[in-house]
Image (tube, rainbow, N blue to C red):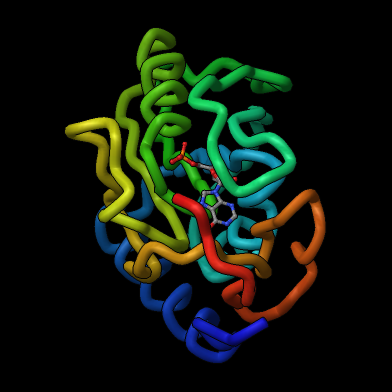
Length: 174
Ligand code: IMP
């Protein structure tokens, strides 16, 4: 296990992201939608840095099996509790990798006619993208093609509790 992004850098970057978001929304109410389970820690830290009116909801999807490779299919496991019609939405995800998950979620959410829909991710692996045209409006860190765990990210549902974003030492097959 090797630390890629320390807890200090994460905290500093999230404060900056929150200021960027506040600047863009200028006091309008923001509805954050976290993608379970990976985004729960990022969302928890981000929402506490935001001043002004914010509400939160969660969706759960399954896109990865127990390993490091995407199944390529996204399934909705838990839907939102409330309507997003006419609201200003920021979809909060742990990592933008192939883009399949966020592409699927954005298509689902756009059908529900939000006023605006933006994406915030802690991590972005641009070299892995499979879906063209999907990009995040707020990115914590761009990272190389390495499988990372910690700060919400898992391997086989483990390591989410690590405070730093770390690289698993075993080589990645993708
Ligand atoms: P995408 O659909 O390929 O963009 O992948 C999105 C999901 O894949 C994320 O929400 C993560 O759950 C998972 N994922 C992608 N890369 C990693 C990684 O390096 N570590 C842990 N999970 C990852």
